[in-house]
Image (cartoon, rainbow over all chains, first blue to last red; front, side, top):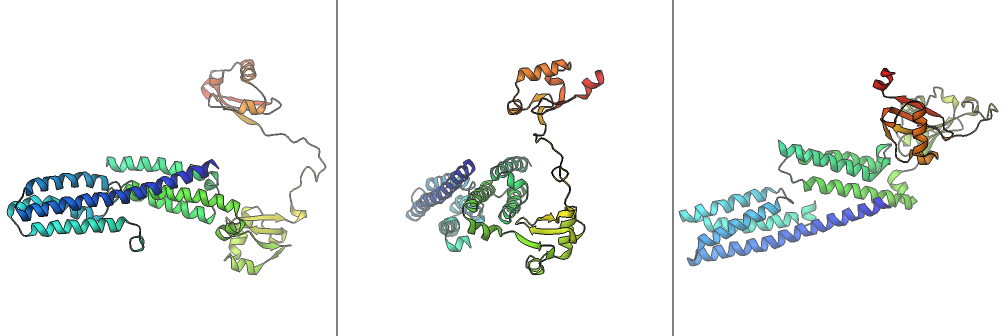
Length: 123
Length: 228
């Protein structure tokens, strides 16, 4: 009976951890989306884009570390590459700047979709 | 390199803990569900060790999930007979009254060689000696021999004898085995006096066994024995 109780506790803990990880990704993505939006707004309106980029980069570094405990998706490497490219693209005044910001939004949605347990992600 | 080392150590401890949680049955003969869990565990455990890009949690979570499910399933199997039959199958009689049931043998996909091999492993070399043979859910065959071929017992030979427990290990490598003296009905004082009468201390003894009627067998450490 002791083993049964331990096993049920372990399963409950794993279920809680799994739900926690999905919630963490959802909240993290929302925050990331807001930072990407504010960077985009700053860039388009001629605001302080550099500050917005620093905030975005600093948030991503922390968020990536937290994500790496739960996921090994290649999407995360793509997102890191895009975030790290942004300052150089901004300095060069490249048109790809906005495209990279959009791709970060797309990849963050993809990351959430791969972690959310629905039929398409399970099978 | 260090990451692989640490991961291997952590997963080793987790797997040992997991198998311990599954209980002693896992270490003996495996039921189908237990075999599946054991095979899966060994595969899953190697993934985060081989590939450092995979988070440790990706290995730990499935291991604990499988182990926990196995424990819960085994409790359910104990409680619900139909479920047990569905998951583990049931024992099948392959030889009854000395006759092989060929249909059951075919259903089990047991060849005659398999059957003969299992009989030989139980020291039965002539199928004519078998009264009943049952294929257990673990795949092992249990054999009941015809009366004339069964080993003679004390009862058959009308020899009277008392049933007594076998000797119990009391000292192992210089240390008293916990609970052994109590279960035999002795105490530490008795042990010390018994050892003292032979000129020994607890730490000098490699193995000591004892029965309930105080019959002891003592093997001292070799260095001590050589000194005597």
